[in-house]
Image 1 (tube, one colour):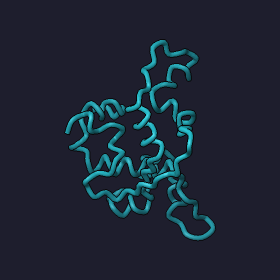
Image 2: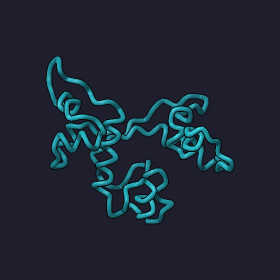
Image 3: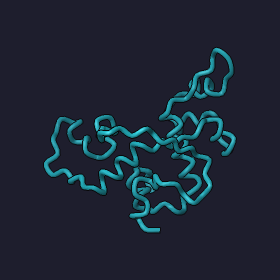
Image 4: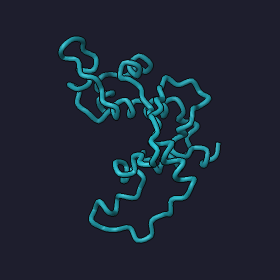
Length: 151
């Protein structure tokens, strides 16, 4: 599989059976998307966040607009319970993957008044971890390196 096939972590449905839910988001008439909220994730806001301006930003063409729209409308999610039941992980490992503390993870698995639902970004981290665990051998090294995983 070529590097170009992995644009934005293959946000299109995969032929592999993964326990990940994709939830489409209603599209607006304007392309507001998440450009304002996720500007730094697209590699454009890093310099401006440090008080510098980018001198030669890459142009956004039709291809990039389609990929941004696809990314913004993709809701890749996996609940902590689904991840826990699928993989032999501990609550501590789930906390590490979700970048939260163990108390928060414990609340996700509790019942009653102490229950706290996971936030969307927690479920996104778990879905992404599931994709990595399922498809690691298929992910090109260049993409793994780009994601700062140190491989």
